[in-house]
Length: 145
Image (cartoon, rainbow, N blue to C red; front, side, top):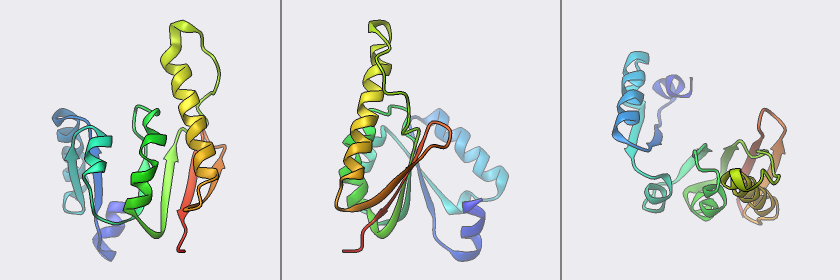
């Protein structure tokens, strides 16, 4: 939907895909929908790719599979967003509970998201809210001053 709008208004979408196979599937989808020219696909681990980026963005949609990275990448999001830019982070109400030793990765993921939520709520660079939609959606606007 956004890519279709960009055909009329201009701009581009940058997506980061973990590997060549997933990136290839994404490109096939973009071609099928006629929006390939509006989308740039970058391949690699999100934290590594983002740390090397210097463009400024109006919108960042965060949906990294490893939710433990949300907090670690917050500084980069702030650096890359234009003033007034929007950060959308998905699944930020992932259960913050102790799942037991068998699921220690899930417990750590929940705790990391809790840290992200508290950090962005208190971050002077952002005005944010957390919406209880699905597994949670954080909506944050980068302050202009």
